[in-house]
Structures are given as C-alpha cells and as structure tokens.
Length: 185
Image (cartoon, rainbow, N blue to C red):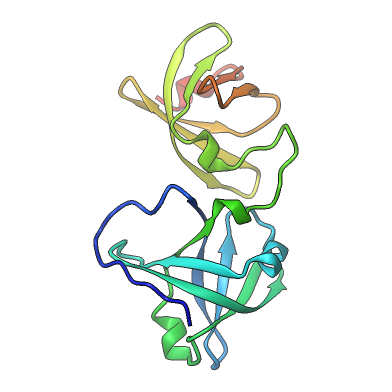
C-alpha cells in the first residue's frame, strides 16, 4: 500500500487538483460514495491513485484505487487499505485530489476550474469585477465566484455570458445580462 500522511496544515502540491469529495460510506466492505465536481463518474475508471484530504484540512493520504463503478452521478470506490464500513465512515467529508497529469484531455474551448482560479474578470465594457475565488455547481449550471472591490459576484458559466477566456493573459471577459451584477451587490 502506497500511503503518505502529512499532518501539517498546508496547501496541497500544485501538481494536484481537487476533483470531488467523499459523500458517505457504501455498504459494509469499506466502499465509499463519491461526488465528482465534473459530474463524470466514469472518469474514475482510469484513475489509479487519489489523494484524500481530511475534512479538517489537516492531513492527506494517498490511496490506490482498487475498483470503481458508477451509480447515477456518483462513483462508488474501493480503496486499498479501506476494508470496513467504519474505515469508510472516517473518510466521509474528505476532499479528493488527483494528479493533474491524470486529468482527461479537454477540447480547446474547455477548461478545468483550477485553470480559471485567480484570473481577473472584466466586463466587455472594461469594468473590473475582481478575481475568480471559487466555483460551485447548481442543477442549472456551474457558478464562478468573483471577489473584488468589496463585492462577491456569482457568474453563471454560460456561453452567453462568458465571452473570452485567456488563461495565459489571466483574464476572463464577460457580457452580463441586465441586472446580474446588481443582484450580486
């Protein structure tokens, strides 16, 4: 078993990207139910190792993925060294990280959230809104959280709103519909 624990409270390695979280145990043999931020649980079939960050953020452990299967929008995983329901319960709430080199290849007009985090967001008219600080999903679409100038804006990741993403130039240009920015203030 390849496991390492780091008990220092620190940021995870830049080579890793957060891909989901452990929702709860599944069954009595140590399997875990996982919510993926990409909503593509089938991707877990190609992942051999994952890093779990304790829900307190104070430690991490690397696990070999023994088996993966889909259950609706969730994935069910069996991890090496986790063989009981109690062991699986201890992992509940843990964030799941993956080596970015293992991420699936995207089309040229697709991006991972971590690629957009920290980019400056501006309107087409040149108004600076702030920087991307977070993301979350709703049933309708993903939301980009932009923080700056004393405000927090919730911007839907929608092709009608997002006009341009320049990762190298570190800027996202948006065309917000009337009222979107005002409702966020």
